[in-house]
Each structure stands twice: as structure tokens, then as C-alpha cells.
Amino acid sequence: MRAPAGGPCCRKLEGMPELPEVETIARGLNRRVAGDVIEYVWLGEKPEPFKSPAKEIASMLERARIATVRRVGKHIVFDLEYPNRNGRKSSRKRGQWIVHLGMTGRLLIASPEVEMAKHTHAVLKLASGRELRFVDPRRFGRLAVVRIESRSVAGFVAPGDEPLDSKIDRFFTLFRGRKTPIKSALLNQKLLSGVGNIYADESLFRAGVRPRRRAALLKRAELWKLHSAVQEVLLEAIKLGGSSVSDYVDAEGREGFFQLQHRVYGREGEPCLVCGASIKRVIIAGRSSHYCPHCQK
DNA sequence: CATGTTTCCTGACAGC
DNA sequence: TGCTGTCAGGAAACAT
Image 1 (tube, rainbow, N blue to C red):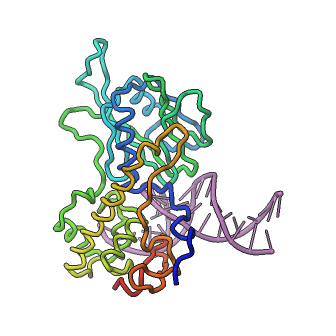
Image 2 (image 1 turned 90 degrees about the horizontal axis):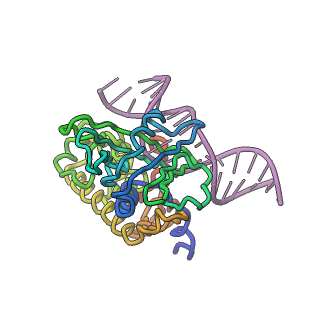
């Protein structure tokens, strides 16, 4: 039995930014807005998707120069500097703008004449004449600012380990003694920052581990496999996303990255691509979790 | 403390 | 056609 052509692989899975997507977006933004200066800021009122008070966000952003844009966990971090009168950068003040896209958040670069998308919550007018817009229909996204007082302070730090830098022995320690299902542990951002539902399922499939297994009870060999599976899956997805990064944040808001070819996620009832068994779906910690009952133990 | 459950929010989609 | 109901999910709040 084969999946119907044009069916499962093409169903809507776009727009759920996990680590690879956020990495792709941050790289694209860095290329396009680094060096630009934020002239002024408009913030929507309504129920605010703002973690910091709106006034604080506006005052940190206005007149700031965007030094770099990068990813930390699932967060997009804009490193900000403040040029003084001579145009030199002031050494005494630095800051960061932190953007979490949630599920449906987007950062778009647009010309001012382009019509404002529905659910636009923030608009940054840039010295280059462009606008950087934050749009988020579902409002799971969050905006925050961080003030960096002294040079010794690092600024925003993710709550957990960066999955791509995490060494295998950190994996052993992170999951030691945890009675929670390994799927929940992978999603716990205080342990690993950046793994979301899709890549958790895909990693577990590649590692041959069922999502409900208690984290603490995984064999060392299984953790070893899982460690490389997580990194492989993420790196592969970044590679695919990177090839179409420029489309993602364009003025029209087209989404353009090639999704990772999912092997289990969203494939309930379809045949496992390795053994042909029917892919199962269960709910773990409120999230749908997909696995192959034959390949995963 | 660790773990499980509920809530937020809207668009997409299925079914009648 | 148009309405209603269900589902999706990150992370915080809340409950156990």
C-alpha cells in the first residue's frame, strides 16, 4: 500500500517555527537588517503579546542600531547598540530585542506602502525606509526586551541546552532520573531549547525509541542514538530551510522553506517508510505524538 | 520539586 | 452556501 500521490506529504505543515525554521529566519533577517537603525516603533494595543511592558519595548527599540540577528533556542535575538551624536556607538548602553514566534508568528520586511496584514502587532520603521513587521494571528508569539547594563552580562540566555552544541554526556545527565516520557523530556525547553513537536517525533523515530518510554529507563545506547538523531534531524532541516531563506521574510510574507521529509509526523495510519507498519498516533502531555510500533521499541 | 492538565487564540477544515 | 464543531500547538499558569 502506498500513500496517495499529492496527499500526506503535501498537507499543511508549514508555519510551525521550531529550531531549524527559527535558525533560517534569523539568518535571513541578519542578512537583511543588520546595520539598519530603528527610527520608531508602533505597538498594537489589544491583549498584548508583549512580555515586557510596551513602553519599555518602544524605548529600547527606538534609535537602536541592529548589530546582529541570531537564534537562541526558539528565540530570535536582535542585538542592539545605540549610536551617540558622533555616530560612534555608545559603549555604555546595549540591549536586545527577543522575539518568540509561537506557532503563527512572522517577522516580515515590507515597504511602508504595502498594506498591513491582519493581526499585525508591531511595526518597526527602519532608517533604510523599510518596515519590520511582527504579525501573529494566534498570538502565541511573544516580544520582550533585555537591557544589558554591564559588559560582563551576557544578556538573554536560553533556559536549556542548545541541542546542536549539546555533547552526549550532557544528554546522559539531562535525562537521568526523569520519570517523564522521553517525548515530554525532549519538548521540555528547560532541558533542551529548541526541539518542538515535529522534530521530537522525527528524532525518536530515527532513534528507534517509542515516545512514551520513561526518559530515565533509556539504555545508554539508545540515548546515544537519540543524541545523534536529534542533531541529524535538526541539521538536515536547517540545510533544507537554508536553500530558500530569502523567500521567508519577504514583503508578501511568502513562506518558502522546504520542509523536512517527515517520516512519522502527520502520517497516522499510513505505512512506515521503513517496515510498512501503520504509523500510530497517541497524545502525550497534550501533544499528538507519532511513531512506528514496529521500528520503535 | 516533578509531573500532568488546562488555557490562551484563530484559521483551516470536515460534516451536515 | 454557510454554519458549527474540532483540531493544531509553545509555554505559562495552575493542579496534583
